[in-house]
Image (spheres, rainbow, N blue to C red):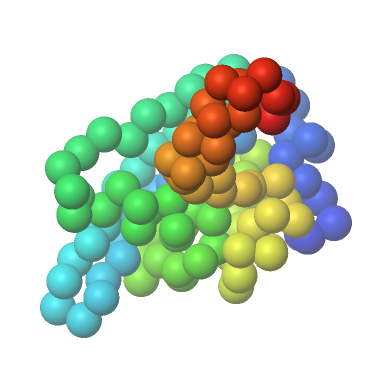
Length: 116
């Protein structure tokens, strides 16, 4: 899959994203160890774990911020390699970060009768 292709080209029956044996290390620390997962159309996947379990690191690998030390990523059945988050974004992968300040701003506006 190239940068000119995107997730919109994937059929509604095939796996959208497949991670195979993803491993990411930082020096002697193994942050993600042999994680495999598949995401199919219509699925919502939740990553749950203790602080420091590697959830954010896995998302950073999937979204192109960190290269995996081992393992492979596939989009629509085709192996992909991202050298940056922009590469991932061009192929339809985007990370939305949790920011409670946005919720607080929304609540403040709604209390004043404004719209967000």
